[in-house]
Length: 91
Image 1 (cartoon, helix red, strand yellow):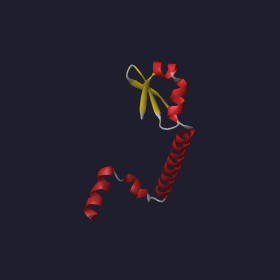
Image 2 (cartoon, helix red, strand yellow):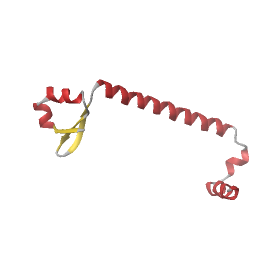
Image 3 (cartoon, rainbow, N blue to C red):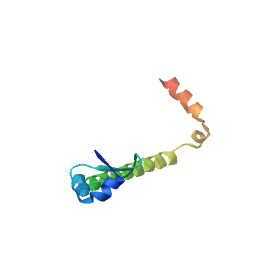
Image 4 (cartoon, helix red, strand yellow):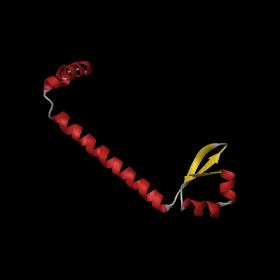
């Protein structure tokens, strides 16, 4: 990934966006990353990954809500150490 300073980015903006079509570009200020410039294709891919992650997290949370709804009342009284002890006993 190419890295340029914020001053370089200002002075060579046209070249910066051309470079971003080939690979993301990191813009730094005082040696620290402050922004990234990337192609529309890269941005689309990042957004698709974010959407997929959100769907997976939502499905995961729904699964645990469903599992919690099926718990017997006595299961709610178990502590983490009780569960860990039972798991170890089953091994």
